[in-house]
Length: 214
Length: 214
DNA sequence: ACCTGAACACCGTTCAAGT
DNA sequence: ACCTGAACACCGTTCAAGT
Image 1: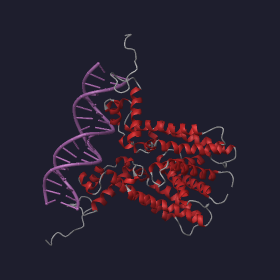
Image 2: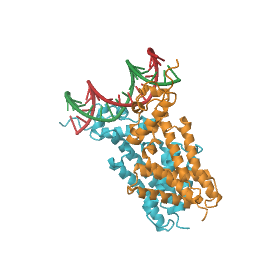
Image 3: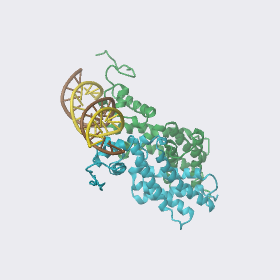
């Protein structure tokens, strides 16, 4: 009974069974890969299982149903957006510059990962209350904007008031711009630099609207 | 051959065959009804056909595939949004008031028909170039905002510049707010009046940002 | 021209069974 | 505890056939 200690298993098709959590992680990575390569429409529980090399039913040991897999994938996507926004906030800059950089970072991240933005609007995720972890990730990302606005208020470059309400307007702007560009609703020259410029202008216009100067 | 003139057919299960265009219209209505009642996730070509009382394959005489049915339904949804925005623009008011009313109307329409807003982000509609009629509907709705901004420019309440670019920022704001509220990403008191107020504040902030006064 | 029957590969999900 | 086999109802889509 001393034989066969728990060994590292090959990535693709493990000979035996997964440890607790490993298959969950593998399915999640597979799901994100499918979303990125083939689009949200191609994501299915079966497809993810197939890619991992496991039977479709095995997924049900780790996710209650398809919507839970989607929610977990969406949560990682939102965490990625929040990380991009935090990285963009250079402490050496002024609060106003940081605000602009954070907003542009949101849009840039979405343009770099369009499929992930689409994932967030999957109909299976309509009921956010069913996915508290996803909701928490949103709240965390939203907090980055709230903090940026509060910093602006402290230096008197944004007028005082409910920072959360102001952040909602900011969140709407960056999410709206990102969505329009990714969804191709509005004709903009396809060049990435032009798209970023549209985002920057929108964020600046918003900032002007929030400005303390009148 | 004078017998059997074209008669009105019963709504539910026509005894014979549909005239040209009738089944198309019926499928479209069924699709919109399903979206409204059961959500975008429940919309399938088969479900629409079943509701009309026709075999699933019959749909293929009127829509090339599922994405064409979705695109046609989405087009009607966008036309509805545009109509709401036009109705909200009271010619007796100032250009600034009209701009605000149009923006709020977009959000109010989305809140009244949340499933239709979701429909617009269906993965099957990702490639807008494949659906020129849908693209045209978007362009038409977008034009309402552009015209409102141009009117503001003429009266010198919005600073001069590319009205289309300014309209993109406005479109992003209203779409973003509508999406946040419908998707429940951000916690706002569920009351409809509060939601409309959030929308109004965001539109006002944006308008201030676009304002000619400095 | 427009609709149905039959058929295909594919899904999400459940249940019983294996180790 | 975790995975597979078998099975169910359901899809989108195609083809051949009917009128």
